Image 1 (spheres, rainbow, N blue to C red):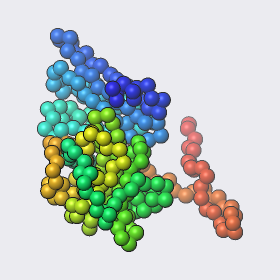
Image 2: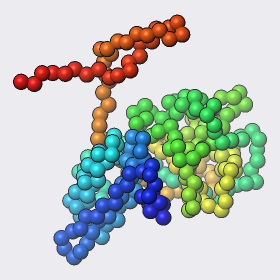
Image 3: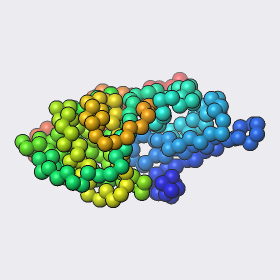
Amino acid sequence: MGNLLTSINPAYDVLTAVCELDEGGKRLISQIRFQIGSQSAKLGFLILDEDDEGAITALLEEMIKTAGTWGALNVTCELESDALFYEAFRHADFNAWAKQKLWRFKRVPREYKAEKFQWRVWHSDDARAMRGLYNAVIPKLFHNLEPLSLRAMLGMVYYNAEGVLQAYADMVYGPRGIWMLPIIHPTTADKIEVLLGLLSGLPFPGKRPIYMCVRSYQPWLEGVLGRMDAEVSPEQVLMVKHLAIKQKVSNKLEVRSLENGHADTGLPVVHFEQKDVH
């Protein structure tokens, strides 16, 4: 249902592609989606009748070309670590950038009400503190792949007694569960009460299971989650195919204007050099 609704959402570009094999009417089906205004296109699923490495690679390459026409800077996907078709993605120039596990909580511990670890829904005033924690926890190399927030809906934040942001959680609510990606400072991550406070503070959990996503750049979270009543998924590999390379633009065009008594040396346009063609 989620894939169907995404296809009619005007905020998304969506392609569902079918690759028919020559023998036996077997086929491969996959879908790629791109939220307009974002940097990454995402592979949603891959259905295959047969593990044909060449056909999978050909299907991926066709979808990658389509993502490029949408303006995506990269294409991302999540694979099980032992997926049989892993090599097909490698042949299509996908590279692993991180690993992750999903911790599934069957119920929300509503009985936990410790005020010391109260979380609340974030608002615009939290953006600067969230950016600081994001820069401190997530390696800069991953910033193009891991946005500050998916912006799907409001997440939650936790401040310590001194008013310093120690954690925030990005969230997506769906009919079959709640997915969250917590970003927690390593000095706070060993306190099990922080995660209990997050689970018990969800505004509208219902009876849906909660999936807490922990990625390999936060290894300090696995220890505390191992002490909680949760099921852990097999390890998944996060992969990316880059379609563009960022380059710095030299400041060759200098524009100065006075604004509130101060000189502004910002560039309103990007300067480029034009060469004569003979």
